[in-house]
Length: 591
Image 1 (cartoon, rainbow, N blue to C red):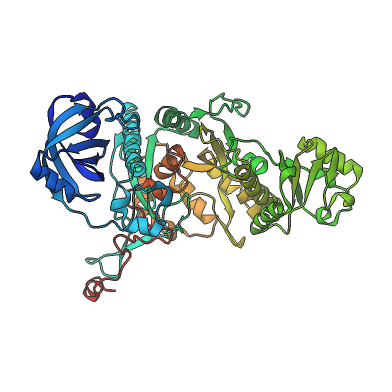
Image 2 (tube, rainbow, N blue to C red):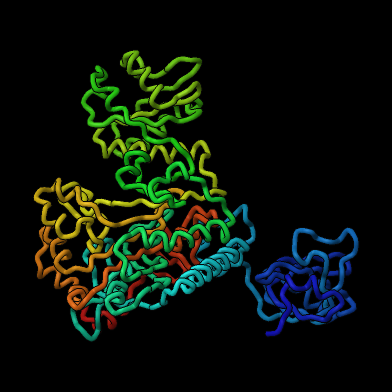
């Protein structure tokens, strides 16, 4: 359909044009009818005069969201009648012909009532209407623009875009798979790929120098505000003849800086005080340092509030809560003395949810340290606390005393919650960091057995020698993987590493967890076979596209970055999915 877009009409004064779109609003003003016509570029005003009886009669019957086409002459609006709030506000279209392309029933949601939006399930049920909102239209355009920038960046650096299979094999590590029964191979299943990990490594064996794709990935993980259920998208890439993760980091971080500054028009936070060693503009922080300093492996660096080690201060304390604790740390909250008792109780509940027994604190007011625990502390201890935390009048110091891992988790969570409460997270600023040197092994969620820290496909630093020297659980926990994450404003947006391309190392990696060679061959047969025929050293990473977009467009829920998301329970309420299927289909699949 040939039509002029609303945004173009300002340049068409005295021209006859055709426009088409939705009726955004209709107003009867005496002998004239005014219609705001909306298309994807904005609004334009139509004027229908009674001297065009057919058009006027039709205009009287129009209702919001009817789809119409109008033909007429563009005229400049009179003085005092111009609308500076829209691109076409200086003109209007005097309609000569009017046509209804489709009628609309009363909408079940009101997409343009920004202050009174329907709840998420109702919006998602009628997502095709919700997408008419300018905010949603902008999101779709932004996502497309980000994809274009990513494609251009990778193409300019000689990466080859290759699509890997969607029907893949089940993988034993990571999240739960989505399984698909095979009709032709009874009692066997495909799995939707959690990531293209094995395929991209096989591409390196196949002689591909540099690979990438904007890949769909599938994991059966519980959804949350920053994690989609079921399917998500990532910029996946791999590079051959790479033995050091730093080469990958240097290759891709300019893209992230470009997206933050040019795409999102945000300011990069100067973190030069954290940059050491190679002098890269984005700091590299070891996993251990991140956990000890920020209580998180994805720290938000837009604010300070670091964890302060105080274990030595209380080495001889008589305070029972601190006396037998493995680790004692604190965070100093500027202006924290302004917190009410009720607010402190709320933060105490947060601390308890992370495993703390309670939340000890000291506030500094009028030159005094005020606290329920102050009377149990010596003057030497009180002096050291104030000195080490840098607390001043009006501040508050909150303590964690427990096992080191618990203390880090509790104070890391509180650090983030306090920053939110005191509005320390500047949305106009982006703070990047690389977290490096992750533990290869770690205790599982129940603390019963060792498991892989990230995945078994990364190269342990020290290679086979480091693995063979690991005789105890402590030795295994000390092994460091050449793995890395990029974090942005408290979100993990990238995970990568140097890959294990040596069969002997892969066997040993699993052997240390009690898995046999036959198990490894069954699960990773294609990869092991390929590695035996001359696999080059290689490395790569993957960026979470949805999460990056969420943060760069200042969205608080990652579900709003997709055109058709599932709700917080993993249900597509628009398409009624998941749903039951015909019993005949199940019989055909042998189920």
